Length: 87
Length: 193
Image 1 (cartoon, rainbow over the protein chains, first blue to last red):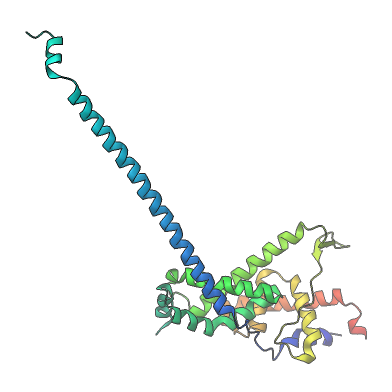
Image 2 (cartoon, rainbow over the protein chains, first blue to last red):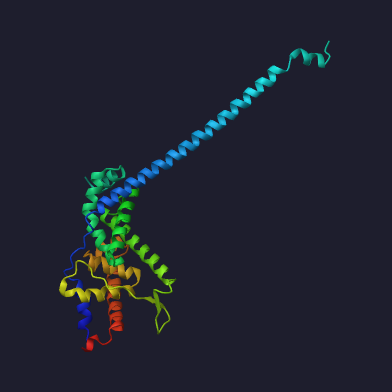
């Protein structure tokens, strides 16, 4: 009665190892390359975003400073003095 | 070159070291995985996933366990994740599931699987065994696959499963008892022939 079950349980005796398809290594190497390229692209996109943001900030800071200088230079000192009637 | 150095080389993107590791472990990994997936296409997909994980996490290998133990653990975890996902998808599949008459549990018809390494005279029994293995709990199945299919010693299996050799022995006994019960249930008339 038990015999047939033991036969089934022992059916894997002398089992040979299953081997992967021959092109598996190539496929894995290709996936690694794709992954590395995607990673590089991602970093380049991040770096580009940082550079663009920095440029925008620098542009606004410079234009803000130059408008300050303009304001200062357009107000004539003599007019200011006369307005307050210092003399 | 020792194991830690070998893995370090892989972490530094050394293609030769990676190829050497693949040559050493690909058939072990594939043979283990195919015993879980019971499908060559899924096994190939998982094999690629395992080696990609090895490449990506090579810098995290601390050398506390052997390289072989580490690789088997990755392969087993990937295989069990794959089975869990597959079962959860099937559980919701109206057309793929049937209800067990006696308990109401959901069961699935598994496709007959021919392990490519089984001897011709054992093909039929091998199919029955792989079918019956579906009934085993994850740890019983892993202990059975590692020792009976992959041919590892109980101590090696214990290291991989992070348990004791005694625990593996007990898991194997329970696995064999459950397999016998399941075979009786599936083929009640077989012993009478």
